[in-house]
Image (cartoon, rainbow, N blue to C red; front, side):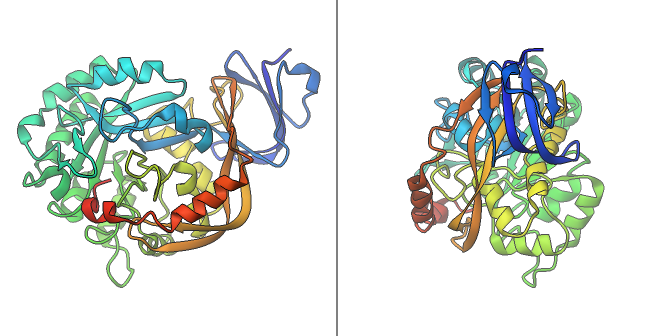
Length: 409
């Protein structure tokens, strides 16, 4: 059999199947057609030398904002894809029932990479988010209409994977817990999971967490004080343990103000690693501190999370969270979405959402991705200057933006 694409000599890591070994991987007709120790060069119409690289399932960024051109915070998924190893972006509620059609027609259907979406409980989606404007979409409960949300989820079932709610003082104003309850009603009626954002109280984490069901997603799970998942002593709060035992999915959702190294250290030391690593990338954190999912994964590596588990949290686990088992795996017959990554040694200074820094001796970078069987190289993969710029910028990412929007992104 002749293959359309052949990746040779890479370290194939597929957490979903437990495979971690040097293997060749071949693609035909947009799907993985063969995995073997040695597939002859001549069987590939195009051959990519993956020696020294990690061949992994295409990364799935469970929390991103890619309604580019339609919202003030949207970024262009196609511009980020090859650089970040991401083949599937899940937009976390940029659009609500009132504009999800525009998102689908003008962005999702035109994108080279896969985009799926949580539909926001707010009819207008996230409409008032910039460096100078902060109007929470759930601050007016007239916009939170579950019937509209359910109708939109059903009409766009091919791309909608859940319901999103942003709760807290920034996103909800004086609405309290009501947006969460309305979003839960909509998710239940639509038969979908809920992704719940919390920023600063009210409502508090203690109000939101007990409401979440098995399979619902708590994003910003390692956020800083207030609404942090740990006490000042570093001990994990009991409601977080109960939520994990109940099957609530813990998602990083790094963003602009929602990831704290000290909180992460405390959670990891107590055995509560995140289920999912996501970037919450948007216009106001794409240049730091989040950058993209690979940077977020590198931060967890630096904190001691094993490489295979870091990869699992960006492939298998998000695929399970959105009930798309055909994604996030390298099994024969699966969709031909692949990330070709590399562990680059060096000295890298990472910064969290509150300005703390962490020095690491390696970071993950992308050589390129395969989308539906088509090779898409990262043109900057061997640009060492890019690494130097990353480290230089890391020292200046904690600026007034975080102070203005602490806890929002």
